[in-house]
Image 1 (cartoon, helix red, strand yellow):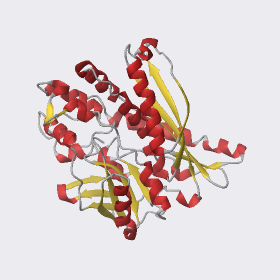
Image 2: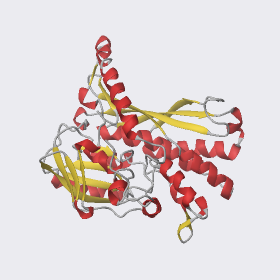
Image 3: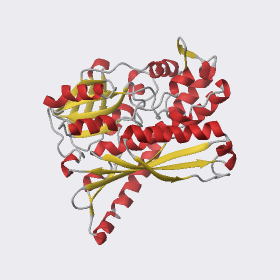
Length: 374
């Protein structure tokens, strides 16, 4: 089901930018069903899957004394913005791009309660020449290591194929896989503890992160100075888009050390705030406090002429990660996040009732029909 019809003839939707989740999601659902039939193979090795992790952001295997979680994620098209900005400014932005790539995997992995352990790199270039640009290549390596250090993970290795004919010449396709440990087992967070009365804590984003870049790039056609258009004094549209994605694992690790176990988590990437409806259980998610929208996302909404419902169904709009905790843990969760350098808000709560997200300050309602991921 589409989010809704564009609000005006000038509205630029994510679908018009070339991304239609209505076409992608059915294939993802079919793949999940086929994959579920393979879970029984683990029994032959003496292990078993955690069925509730099917359809979540990371897959979880029960290996006895603890759980293992794993994920693979690609960056998407943010490298195209970095490439264009390099031509316009002479600067390389690939240290930040490296962080973006790792964040895509780690921010998914931690939703199930895992401590990230190992990251693997997949850097597929359109030709060997890509790696010959020493500044760009060194930034990618240094940024990758720095992100690993921030998340306290080992960089295990990777693959650097040159795929002429598959990847466009002069371009690179970046992806990361991550494996983590859920130990003790009580840290498992797949929503089985989720209940009415739980608080919704939202953690700040740094900007667009790595979702919605197809829309962001399409918007350049409407801007008088393209990526160099200033969205506020001294900050260009291109630079704002390239702010690295926040790494949220320091927060989830700090919560564990403080004795707080989230009942559920959601990484707010594709599908925007609709991701708050990710868990299959029937609850009403009532939002009373909306985080401030980062300047680049506010600018994008204005330029794309999107109403709030369209914008919040696609972009993170200032909130990059959601943590669902017991009401009595909510304020402490905010304090711990802020101590990690990431702003946070107690934004709302769960109630018994039909499955829906009510963003009351903006008069927006998303229902179960607006998010079909299983």
